[in-house]
Image 1: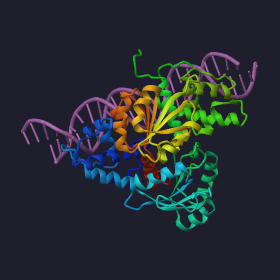
Image 2: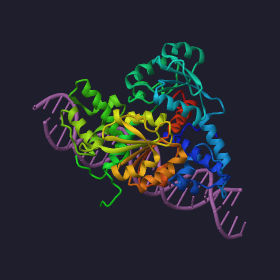
Image 3: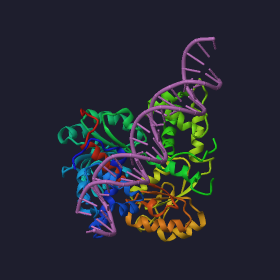
Image 4: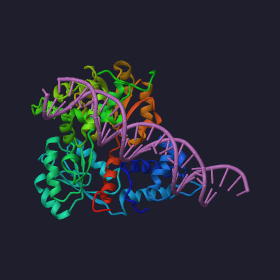
Length: 217
Length: 217
DNA sequence: TAGATTGTTAATCGATTAACAATC
DNA sequence: TAGATTGTTAATCGATTAACAATC
C-alpha cells in the first residue's frame, strides 16, 4: 500500500503489464485469480507475481488468491496516484507525435495532455488529441502558466538535447524521449524514459539472424 | 566475430546503443576510443563495455584502445548481418504505422520495407515510405510471393493476436509488436519485440510520483 | 479438518563490477 | 622501459525462483 522505498525498476516496469492483464480479466467477468494462473497467462512464474505484489504490501488472501478488482485498484493507485493526473505536454506534432498523442489520451491513465508544440507552420493552430498545436516560441510562457510535469519529445535527435536542457530550466520533471539520444546520460535530474524505436528493431533483427533456441549443442 | 552461442539478451539490447554512439564518434572524426571514455559517454562502466565487446571476440588493442571504425564494422556486422537486408512488411498504415515506416527506412539498417497493408479503403493505394499500401486481403498472396522475414504490427490490440497466428502460418519469423498485447506469450515460435507505448509512459509516471533518489535515508 | 494458495525466507541464477595479468 | 588499456577471471550484487510455514 504505502511505498517501502525499495521497489526495483524491473518490478515497476512490470506493473503496467499486470494492469493490462487484470483489466482483461475484469472485462471477462473474473473476480478472483491465483498467482499461478496469472503467471501462466503472462508467461512468468507464480513466485515472481507474489514477490512483486508483496513489494507494496500483500493484498491477496491466503488459501483463496487475489481479488481482481482489489489488484486493479491497488496497482492503478500505484501507477496513477490518487486521481491527480500529471499535466503533460507534447513537443513535435508530426506523424510520430500525432500517433503518440492518441496513446496519451486513450491508452494510459494518469496523464492529461494540456498542450502540443511544433515549429512547422503548417501544423500550428490545428487540433490534435483535444489540444491545439502551438508554436514552439510559446513554450516558455505556456509552462510558466500551466506548470506541466511531463514532456513527451517527438522531435529529431539533435533538437532533443537542447530542448531537454530548456525543459529542465522550465521545471519539467519527466521526459518521454523518442529521439535517438540518451537524455538520461546528460540530464540525470530528469526522470527519463528513453524509447529508441530503431534500437528495438535492430535487436529483433540480430535475434532473427542468430537463432539460439534451435538444434544447437 | 563468430557467435559463441552465449550472448545474453541484455548485451544484445545494448548493441544498437553502442552503434549509435560509435556513429557519432565517427562523425566527429574520432578514430580511437577507450572503454572508459565510451563508458563515461554512455553512462555505463568500462568493465561492462569490455565484457560486452568480448562476447563476440576481442577487437580492441591492448594498451591502445578500440578503433572506432573496427568497432562500427564489427557491431554493424553483428546487427545487420553481412549486407543481406531482412525483407519487412508493415501492417496497419495509420498514424503510428506511418511514423514507424519512416524509422524502418531511415533510422535502421538491416531491413528492407517491401510492403504495407491496411484495411482502411481510404489508405489503400497511397504510397508510404517507398511502398504502396495494399489491402489486407492481398497479404497471403504477397507473402507467398515475396517471403518477408519480419512483420511490423501497428494495429489495434485485438487484431494483433489473430494476425500473429496468421503470420506464423505464412512463415514470418519475427514480429515487432506495437499492440497492447504480449504476442511472445502466445507465439513462442516467433521472435517478438513487444513495444507497449502506454507501458513506458505509465512507469515514467510512477517514478515521478514516487521519487526515490532524493533526501531519503 | 483438508486443500489451496498466499506471504516470506532461503537458494539459485545471472548480470554487473572489480581486479589484475597480459601486452601493445 | 614505462604507461596505458585490453582480455579475462574472480567477487559482488541483485533479481528470479524455489520452498515452506502461515492461514484462509
